[in-house]
Image: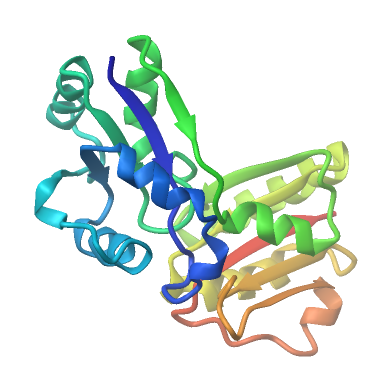
Length: 231
């Protein structure tokens, strides 16, 4: 019977120490890989398993898990393949198109095994000092400036009402604008955590109030960043 293994990858290319040793064993169980980015996945696999013969395995790019990809995925499972799903960074199925394939596997009764690895969402939350009992990941906020500010205020209100940590991300080239909108939209006492380059040598995860951030606004352009908010 076919099965699915959810294989985590690094957040920062050289941070191989964040990948547990048993991930190599998980890769070795698979005969077929559905991946967000085939080139970077192949490079990652060769770093942790140098003897791997890449061409001995079947590969399929997920993209946004179009219907044809889902059908190919289910066909491979029915043929008995052990399939590895790999995100571009971090854990597959979390803010990742591989979730659609996992859903298809669950709906069709195939076993799914998640393997442990780095998640920027959890690592940032752990280091933020914010509420880890109640938290919500919101993905990307609206691109339109007025809609984004409206969403930020709504997240702040929800955070205060439910004592829930709000977590979200932005396209790296819009990080500075996101920070600017957070500081202009939120109350001075609201806490903002900025986690950047998580697991990299220059990693920084800092929580300050809006008022405190206003005194030393960070440069975030084109840097992998995750934002957390607690009112």
